[in-house]
Image 1 (cartoon, rainbow, N blue to C red):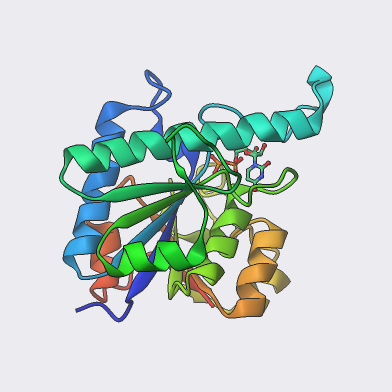
Image 2 (image 1 turned 60 degrees about the vertical axis):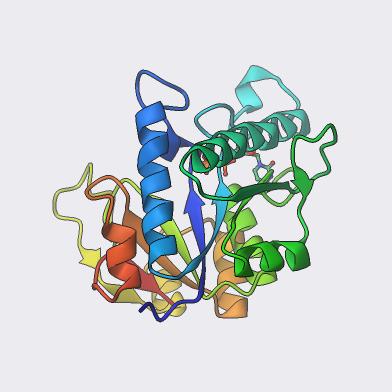
Length: 236
Ligand code: UDP
């Protein structure tokens, strides 16, 4: 029995990709396995997905492309990822609804609506929020913080390639120290990159905890944490 009732899982676009595929079918089914194990722990699951595997608006300065247009493209990339996750869920008999931060017609997905999302979640459906905040100049981490607050999530689980928050990049610096838990203030004092500052400040102001965990090592990590295992780094 998990102490959490409703979680928001933040998946970056990279978490869905592989060197061979922009959206990798095997990785996608791993993600569905992670979602299924959380649902089996009787936890409601909302997802905010990134788009970095397809397009990122940030960092376009040197290409000359208009940043706002780039961000619109980046947000549309997240919609593509969300549709792929929902489709993979449906194929595994998990009901999934895609919502977008800006309206998209044509039956592609629903507009983001926190009340409707909470209703779907309480019925055991997975709600996948796409298009981040729906506005340019933000990130999907900020989208995760915003949607997490809107739906009264108990915690954000941020899936990464490493097993928690480190004092430095552990893939580069072998002496980097891993933290089991941190307060919001400790993370700020130590200048640790848990999320970008806008997202982090939103979480801090609303007391929304963040758990950074690895989805690479073991597909059961999230459900293990939900069931009390001291894995990942808890921030809050
Ligand atoms: N984006 C945006 N507003 C948002 C969220 C995302 O404009 O609220 C755009 C931005 O261009 C970003 C891209 O969408 O580079 C993909 O999002 P992000 O980089 O956060 O994805 P991730 O790194 O998680 O894959």
